[in-house]
Image: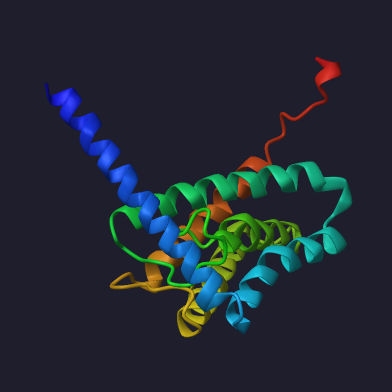
Length: 187
């Protein structure tokens, strides 16, 4: 009997989520679409990728994209966990398909920033480089997004953001420096 009750509760929650998603879509359409913030958020999807395409180290594109993809997966996973626990929120909705997530961060800003950081000064001490990257991203970037209303940290410390960015950077660094890559036809 508990399973059927669980299915009924799950369906009720899904219906409530659908209503909330509709409200977010209406908010984007009626309140955000005509603001500079919405257009800035949309630009945050596109401009970082253009910058990366222009300035990427072309010989390392595959490795860098692998690091970027891993950054996307990890940042989404961390964000979904934190959002479900109510640790922070994103009041500004750019695309109402995933209204609780700030998609430009996950699919553009974080991966592109990590990929660019990985290729800049590749011989620099990775620990120092990770600390510098994380400090800029957490104390600069996240505080900027708080100031313009894109991010509500609630009681979340920027130091925790620093740790998250350091983790994202270091995991991407680890996967991009693996020496066991070879062409599939060479096996």
